[in-house]
Amino acid sequence: MLIPRSHPRAASLHIREKLVSGYRKGLVVEEGLLAHGRGEMFDYLVGEKTLKTSHAAIKAAAHMLLSAKHPVISVNGNMAALCAREIVRLAQVTGAEIEVNLFYASKKRKKAIANFLKKNGARKVLGFDAKFSQKIPRLDSARRVVDERGMFIADVVLVPLEDGDRTIALKKFGKKVITFDLNPMSRTAQTADITIVDNVTRGMELLVETCKKMKKSSLEKNFKFDNKKNLNQSILTIKNNLGRLSHA
Ligand code: ATP
Ligand code: MG
Image (cartoon, rainbow, N blue to C red; front, side):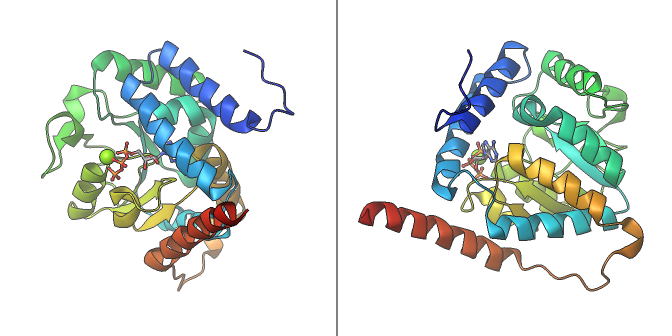
């Protein structure tokens, strides 16, 4: 379907089309479409633009990724469908590994996602070779399986659009966690070390550009970021947006 650029919801409808196309290619499951709907609702509440607080979180995330010894980008179906190019570019600029990890795991879908990432320029994709499987504790079956060359030994993990159980398990397993989550109140948002409250389709692009500008060799030594404070400010912005609408 062709959506005119002048349509008031053009951006969000294009994002939706990308996801549906990912669904048709076998990258995304039905549940992923529903999770996206939850995200769209929060995107509406933040005004479908990157908040000031999200810019601050992106800067902190770039700093953490560039300072990491073994950063990993965890990719699920929605993420691959929406941001394959940006995932590859982020891996290139930070030296991170790319690992497929699915809530609703199937070999076929993992393979489809890995192939799609490779089509978009990824040279190496981890997470689907049983030979390298390891398990993280305190998590049920499929989601606990990680790659011993990737998430198992990672110090920093970027887990966008993630479920709370898995984020909590990764934290308990000693990982520093960065996430993209449009809902600042979700368990993932509240548990991560750095939460970027932004649509991945906007935020990933900004994160790549920020990493490019922030050189590994000249990183600030005492970089500080207060995730709780930043999240509270994002929640306040949503509250103010709602207040403005209800007074209009
Ligand atoms: P949690 O398990 O962390 O409490 P949840 O159960 O409410 O969260 P999940 O389906 O587990 O939600 O996780 C998906 C999260 O991703 C949701 O918080 C949703 O708002 C967010 N999300 C969906 N699409 C996007 C997107 N395009 N960009 C950023 N965030 C998104
Ligand atoms: Mg959840």
